[in-house]
Length: 374
Image (tube, rainbow, N blue to C red; front, side, top):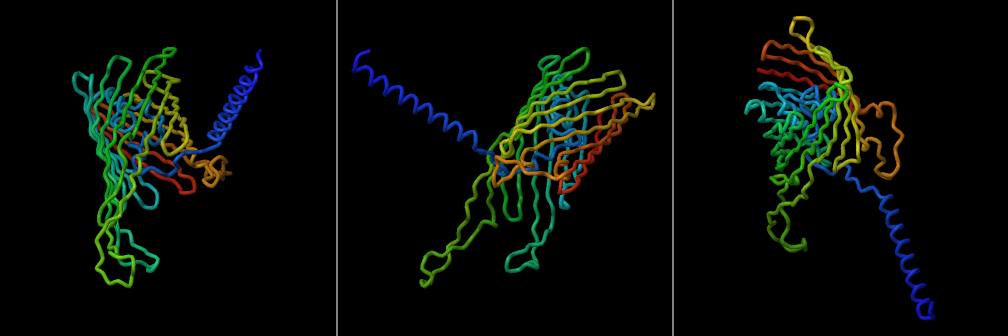
């Protein structure tokens, strides 16, 4: 090696070694950083579900849904509806608030396609207004009404694969402020047999859309024309500009397998992996046992249960890399259970379902739904 080449080679080794060290350091910093946007999404009511059966089974329900509530959980499942149907449900949520969901759907083109419309609304009425200057109340009241309306189209592309899409508008009325957004849900479902037992795999992307920003009288202000208070001027009307907040976009992969599958008896195990733009990855696991017919009566029933893990429930926001020590009550958050009874005769069917979902230190919630098919 020449005397001129040796220093150059040594310099190159030093530079490459330093660059590698810097890259490793940067990678370490990235690994130690938690950029999860906890609590940064608007329109959280979009995550409340649809129907008591889905609430009892959590997000894992997306793999098995083939009724009207498929419009919410997985649009692809709507293409597998055996007959037209309608469903309405009400969620007795926290702090005396209520969420109501309803939908109507019908298959067409010989059952190859299906179309449906859904409506969900959440809020409360006439709450007193308190301020720092008037802690006992101003005498005024305010109300909150959050609503979404969705249209779903689904299609069977083969005897094993279906896909669907839902487009929806989101409308917020928060006192004297209002906001709007547009979003879409996408879903796919693959169904087959494994050891002669049904198995289903689902992929869904929910609430992919525009940011939700607000305007209205609540943002109107009067500001002085001059910054010097000694100069008398009339105030200038203005309006605060709000930042747009993203919707709670969530990607899910669901898997369901019928551990027991007979003509009148079914035991299904379900699981779900999910990733949200406002949380780290979570999962759901659950099961459903259903007896389709009690003898020749036409009546059947089902019992269900699940547990949904959301990492944000165990995050220390002061130091997001650490985990808090949860109490037993907090650890039970995400536990859900329920059941239902149904009646069928020919093409006509009726169903009533109930779900109980525990919200940790916030207490329990209850979901009731009623369905009809024809």
